[in-house]
Length: 122
Image (tube, rainbow, N blue to C red; front, top):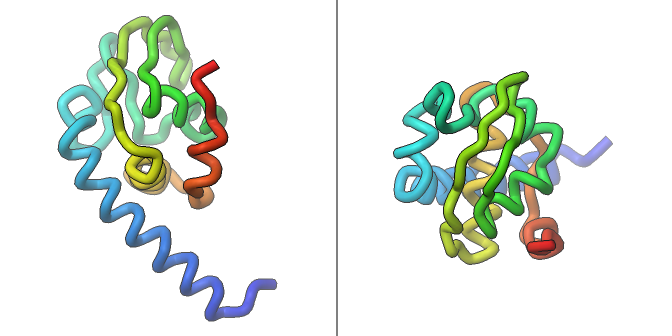
């Protein structure tokens, strides 16, 4: 079991990353994925309660880093659109991932900078 102080430090780290990530989300993502991550049915997949995000985190990181094209299935619905590259720095990708993975009922482990850096284009 982790010492209580370490748990608090991890929670503070996640909270700070989520705060920065929310700003990035509001600047780049909100138009398509909407204010509470509900997406637009038939056009843009939801992020809230998204099985794709929680089960395929590396693929989600890759989409944020490099864009996404082609079909993907979220919560049983197939989407076949284009997400253009956002040209974010790796630390910004980390922060927005921590925000979307821990908002709107989503709960996931902290995404580290090293994790983001390990996700390659191909």
